[in-house]
Image 1 (cartoon, helix red, strand yellow):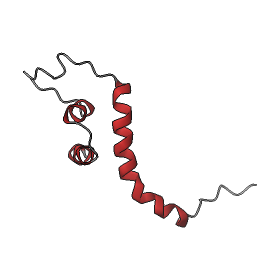
Image 2 (tube, one colour; image 1 turned 30 degrees about the vertical axis):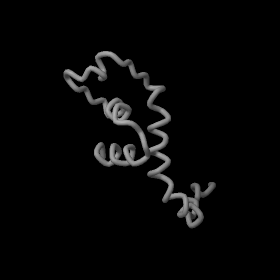
Image 3 (cartoon, helix red, strand yellow; image 1 turned 180 degrees about the vertical axis):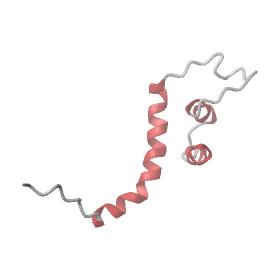
Length: 75
């Protein structure tokens, strides 16, 4: 799943550093990495939403055919 998420993120134009941060990767010796740049969870919300939207987009066409479940019968 991590590779799939990263591949989709890359194809959606999300930068490599953001992908690494979202996957919680740490690279030893990377001068642009987690040792210097501070990434807040709020910084990752938009890229993560972009990937989620891409994944769920095909499911939207199926929602017209969904039959709602009935609740328990009264009594």
